[in-house]
Amino acid sequence: MIDVLIDTLLDVVKLIPFLFIAFLIIELMEHKFSSKTTNMIKKSGKFGPAIGSLLGLLPQCGFGVLATNLYITRILSLGTLVAVYLSTSDEMLPILISEQASFKTIATILSIKFIVGLVVGFIIDFIYHKNETKKEEHIHDLCEHDHCHCEEGILKSSILHTIKTIFFIAIVTFALNTIMHYVGEDCLKEILSKNTFLAPFISSLIGLIPNCGASIVISELYVNNIIQLGTAIAGLLTGSGVAILVLFKSNKNLKENLMITGIIYITGVIVGLIIELLMTIL
Image 1 (cartoon, rainbow, N blue to C red):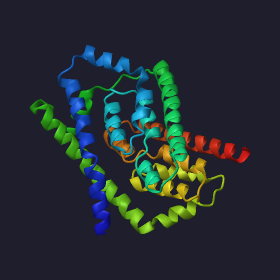
Image 2: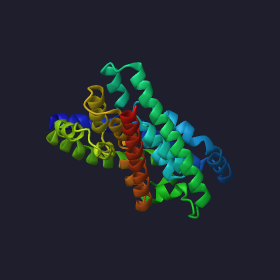
Image 3: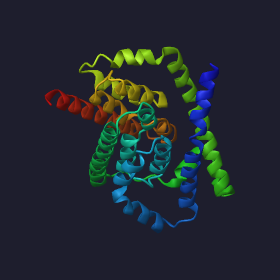
C-alpha cells in the first residue's frame, strides 16, 4: 500500500505544472484579451491537429491534460484535442528506450501515432466545423462551475482551479493504482498475449485506463514479442494517461465526453485491426 501511495503521489505531482499553466492561460484569455483577439486565436488554429499531434509525442501525459483544459474553454478545437489524445505517448517512449528497442521500432510507432492523430484530427475539424450548430461555451463557464472567485486575481483563481482538479485526480488515481496493484500486470499480460482477433479491442480498452500503467504494460508486452504490433498500437493510441479523467471531471457535457472517448477507442481498434491484417498479408 505504501508503494501505491508513492506511485499516486508521483503521478499527481508531475501533472501540477501542466494544470497550472493551462488554467493560467485560460485566465489570461478571459481577463487580458478582448473577444476579438480570442476569436483570432481560435480561427488561426486550423493547423491545430498537426501541432497537437506533434506535441502529443512528448513522453508524458501532461500536455494532454493542458490540451483538455484549453479545449473545454474552446481555445483549442475538437480535432486538435483528439490529435493530442491519439499521439500522446505517456510512458511508452521511456519504456521502449529502457528496453533497448531498435530505432526503427520506436520511429515506426511514433510515426503511426503522429499520422493517425494528424489525419483523424483534421477530419474531425472538417466535419465538426461544417455541422456545428451549438453555441460555444465561454471561458468564464469554467470559473462559474468551479466557484474560483476569478475577480480576486488571475494567479489565485488559477491555483484554486489546479488544487480542485488535482484533488479529484489524486482520488481516482489512487483507486486505479490500488486495483492495478492487486489485480497485477500478469492478468493483463494473460488477456493480451493470446493474439486473437479480439486483442486490439481489448488493448484499446486497456489503453483508456487513465493511468500510466496501461502504456507501460502494453509497451513491455510488445518489446518482449508477447503481442503483435497492431495490438500494441491499438492500446497506445488510446493511452492518453489521465487526460480523459480531466475531461470527464471538468467538461460538464457528458454526451460530448462519451463521444470523444468513443472516437479514441474506435480509432484505436480500427488502426490496430488494419495493422494486424497487413502484418498477416505481408
